[in-house]
Image (cartoon, rainbow, N blue to C red; front, side):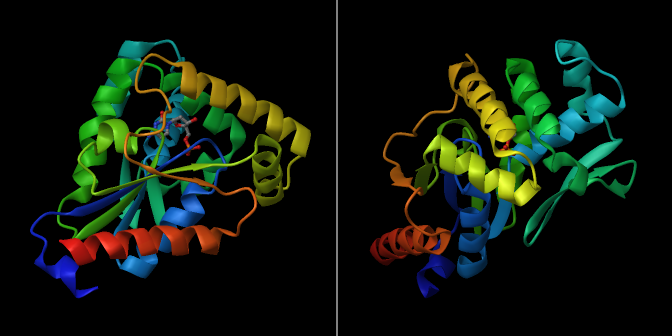
Length: 228
Ligand code: DC
């Protein structure tokens, strides 16, 4: 992929979609293949949610949450295959993946002021990298509207619940119920709702393997790089 060396700004690929649509696995593998940096923007919301829970800041305390976005007690670090959350210098990334932290993250992500406070930190992930794969809910619409490639992943809701339940060793019905609520919250909120970005490559991941999805996206990126 020699063409990308000639690009003078970061080549950004965004991957958006609902919970457990395969965004993390696909975007992480894609970043590895392209040798791009990788960021899960959900980690910013999950990190904030976890720290808010630890500091007992309620989900509707917008001022408190906004201030917490800038609190030096926590920060995000990009690692090759992990978007890490640090709280008081401890790596707490393992704690952000519980569905209750995801639900709390979904609730606080409704607040426009909170989103605005986290936006620049997410955009800064592109700095100093030849390429970045960013996954989340609004990466192609709000965080990186100028991204060169935008992908939207979707999948059958029962299938998504099974995938996540297997990962977490949780009950599939409980996971499906929590996901339905979260999907509804994420797509119906006023601020940056989950939506298909214009001009995006839409892939239904229900009946194909994640590797096949990565192959499709990689082919799309390669074709584009050839035209640059
Ligand atoms: O992708 P995830 O499951 O880690 O995201 C957790 C929550 O964070 C999600 O339900 C909504 C919020 N989120 C968001 O509002 N915008 C993003 N770009 C990423 C996540």
